[in-house]
Image (cartoon, rainbow, N blue to C red):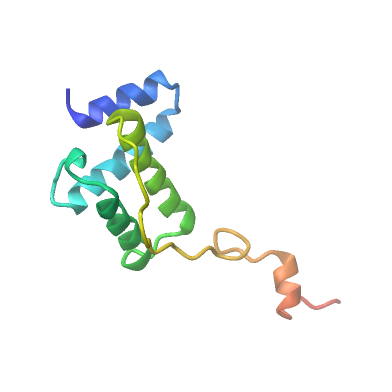
Length: 118
């Protein structure tokens, strides 16, 4: 059975949503393609760290996007390949925006002098 079919089977057994299944399989595909179609069983923590750092540095993804990618890859290793992961070493993390999703809260706007009393 192909790797992504194995991933789908485990996700369905765990009753994850279809959107989670789609997101996880997409991230796993991207991870494999990033490393030249190398099978994940032949990779480990250093390759995961390189990919997650690439997302933050070169792709400039949001922290939540980077976390979703990491969760998908960790799911692959722990739940599908039955392999425990060690330390990822120094992994570049995406910067979290204040106020979430790039939107400033009214309090942030007041503190920065953007909202003034009428």
